[in-house]
Length: 427
Image 1: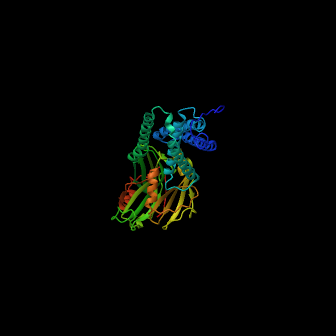
Image 2: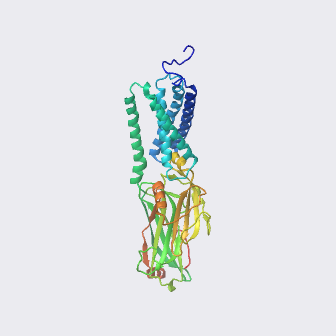
Image 3: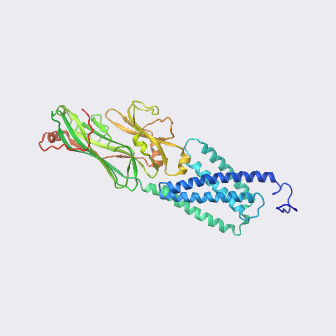
């Protein structure tokens, strides 16, 4: 028609491009969707390319940046495809943009499986449904018609995508699995001495933890116990016949980083009152260390300064008897920005709980403010932390020594009393 930029041969008022209102609505929705997706992808890609914790995630960040740029091009192509269609490549770019929206929204929903329902969940579902509807419409209208060799171009796009996907799965799933942290810990008795009144036996306990693996970790908490009891059944860690003399931590402050090959140790002095009146046959010392992978999350320094001592905690509801001694907690950041968006704000909480002759540490990672119910028998809850963050419990080797031998060393003129730090407890 004279004076109109589009010349249409065949069809009636129900055929494109005469359905002006429908074209403008569809084009506007696609344009807005592409711009929003591009903004999200560019933000995620930029932050991951600069701040992601692993090399593979940084490479993935650059890939996401490239996808964001394609979305911007698709947004521009939308204006031509749903208007004049002067450029033959506008249809393929629009189709590529819809495919990226589908992959982005489905990936976000996949990461949110088992998570709480958030605003991002609604957005992901909306964009996923919109990309499916738009994809069907573009396929029906054969949006790739402007390409000279569509099959070759499709193969050229699919093959690099598959290679990138395989590489991402290798770096994010396989490599972290085969490079599991290897943390070694233990305790041993060293010097023994008596005070000037010979009423207190002072025993030096050396506790250590070493990273023998290739993965750096954070030490969330540490415990060492000193028990006294009979010489039999010493391998039973919770034997009721053993009495707790002292328990404490040897990695301070909590949250310290432990790099591959690095070791943290501490010598502590444990006081045992009236040793000549005790009927102990042996003393045993053992350690436990609770660590988490440093390539899965970022633990701020505030964690080690957040300790609160309390008899009862509002957000802790035990399913077994126990006394809460203290709690450590802080915000954490996940290894990549896409995980931060999918999982939302996360807060780590660590409790030390005492049970008479024993004590342990409970760990929870959940959204801030949630009421937490901890149960040491809940294997699913602990396994979730292991799978997601590489939570590790390293139980150290046990050291035992005859109580009589320690007393003889303490009474001996060659006894030593050199220590680095004193942690004292009366018995």
